[in-house]
Length: 426
Image (cartoon, rainbow, N blue to C red; front, side):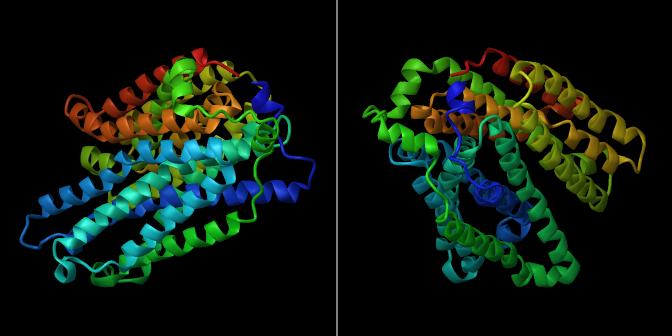
């Protein structure tokens, strides 16, 4: 724990430089969630452009979701490779490269001709671009958490992680806002024809700008200290993890499952579930999604800051219970009082503070020499497995009871509590 709280700080400097570091570190992670939202919202239009019109609508949409999922399958491998170089060659180099590897494919998606021009090459190129994005995303969030925690002043690493996590969830808010604005200024035909490209072009430009700005960042003090003391091992970090830190990896994977459940079930899946289960209008569910995301952003900043003052296990017990209550309120009480979905969605977002406890626990579980690799391996494998399986599991359980989403989140909250409770602290 001392390597996380005490050794992991930047030299004396202005608060402005510290905030600049946190802000620049957040940009790439925000792009990750921004891309998730715009691709998900535009799936039907993308399917019409990149697959034969002779196919059934459901088949084209399924194929498009398959391309989207391929990016997530590439996360563990890409994250592990970049984390390896982050532990061996430096955090800054990998952190700058990862946002470039995300920005270029996003920009190219906005420029890529459709099936009518490239034929079968169109979905094939789109698949390659999604895999590139997935590989980059695998190193982005873990790299950001490691970077800001090792730059934070003494006793403020939790706040730094909370601010970065808030930036990540802010990407969902940004993506939703861009889509809503596009629908406000363009007709449905204009969006289907060419307007759908605008969010991808904006995301690509946004990412390239973040890459340029990140060149101003300094290497973390922790890595510089390891390099000066020649503490960088020649052994592959992944082998060190599997040999010496299996408990930390398993506990971190368990807590990441809780993180995916909170984000996917309470924010991303909530609009379609409420529309299908309770016939709430798309406009109302979109407003509820925005309220939930905004409150989630504030909640993770607060809970991250609390880890600098209160024991992590005590906070885990508190926030696991709050998360279960928030999920139950959203899916159990909101349908009983029509017109209150936005309010209950906001409450559920405030109850998601457990999300920020996850990276704090992971960062404390691994020593600096393998910290990047440990966080990346645990986070990406768990996110790829549970993030991909959660929608299918919820869909299969909903016919049994409309409270299935709340029960699922409550179950994962217990898993996350156990993971944080038994997670080691280096």
